[in-house]
Image 1 (cartoon, rainbow, N blue to C red):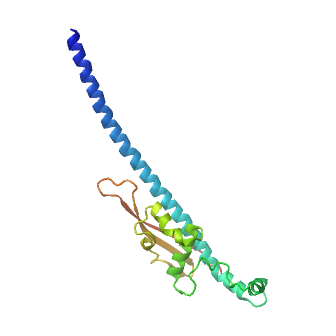
Image 2 (image 1 turned 60 degrees about the vertical axis):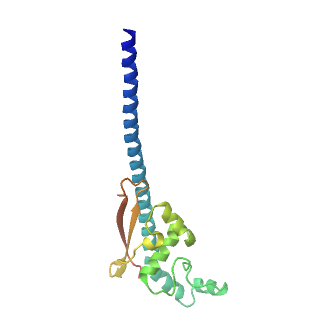
Image 3 (image 1 turned 90 degrees about the vertical axis):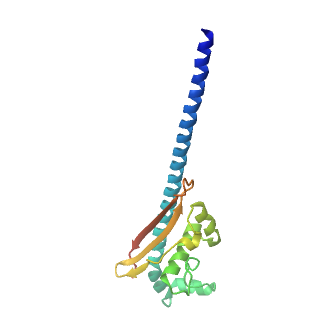
Length: 180
């Protein structure tokens, strides 16, 4: 009798190990999926915040340039006194390009990196933006009577890719009224 009871217990231990390994595998895949979801959520949230800040900043340029360019303003006197350019936001805009899309991209990257554009690739890599800086597409950015419309398209890769299906294409747009 003892011999048959010992065999049943040994079989149960093997069955318990099999159930635990299946449950642990399913649990790990679920945790990886949730983590990947949160990385995508964080990246999308950060990109939306930076895009909105960029649009608000660009919408104020027309007002700032006209106010600082007027003769006799205190801003113009101070900038001339210190030999500075009349626009304090020059570090955000690729001046001289004359292309709204390029200026929007340059300012977007400056806001994303806190002004240190050399860190852009590193930050976009952390968010898993496919192609880094080159993967950001501002081709749908334009200005009309209602304001400035910024749109960025990019592709995010999931943190943990299962069966090579780990990309999501995103497009985010904002509109900000131009100050005239």
